[in-house]
Image (cartoon, rainbow, N blue to C red; front, side):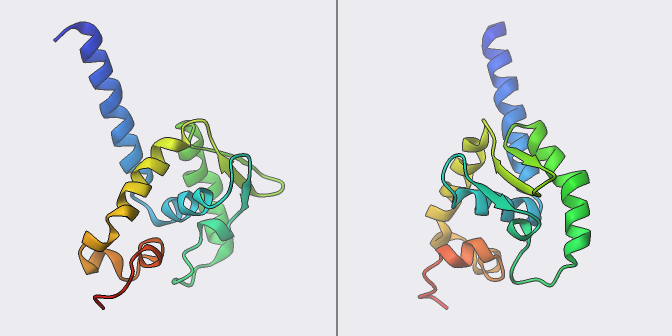
Length: 132
């Protein structure tokens, strides 16, 4: 393996690790899902776009977690751009990485085990429900 191939492999591995790290937490998945529904250049309002509609959650706590944890991680990877006033987020230059992975999961939602679909709002929306 040449040095260039090793560098490409290392870079791809880091990007994949980052994608899965970002998608590992519900508020970030909810935000990615919400951003997939807006056109390029559009924005979503926070904290609402990161809130799971199936869970009761303190919006002030979610706002704090978004500002200090979730949004900085997303912005560091260039997945999301955000602002304090109005508190909102839009797609970043690398958002397509997250969107591609989520679209792949949505396309195969019918093949996912029920325990991964039930109670997971974005997947329940994609799942046709005929087997329930």
